Image (cartoon, rainbow, N blue to C red; front, top):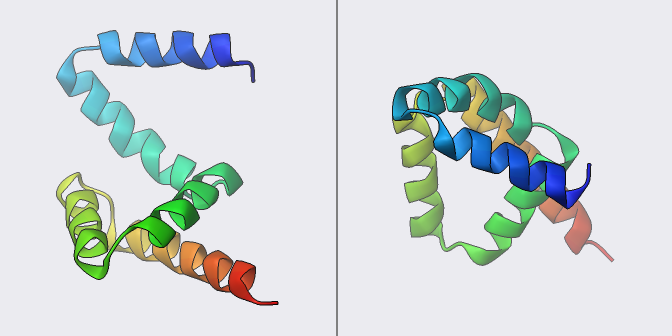
Length: 88
């Protein structure tokens, strides 16, 4: 996907009313988190976050209505990938 298309989609999403943005996030975010690029972003976040920051991230995900299974699966996959990347 080219960057112009991504930028256009981002503008469209940000132009939506807040309620529609929230509904879209509830429906789409769990799916995006479990994609290869989503997991790569989680890996980057795990490397950069302290334990306290990671706890805060999990709490924000829960507050946004992501299921415990989705949060746990995303974190588990991110940890697995981060550990695999750290092996010689």
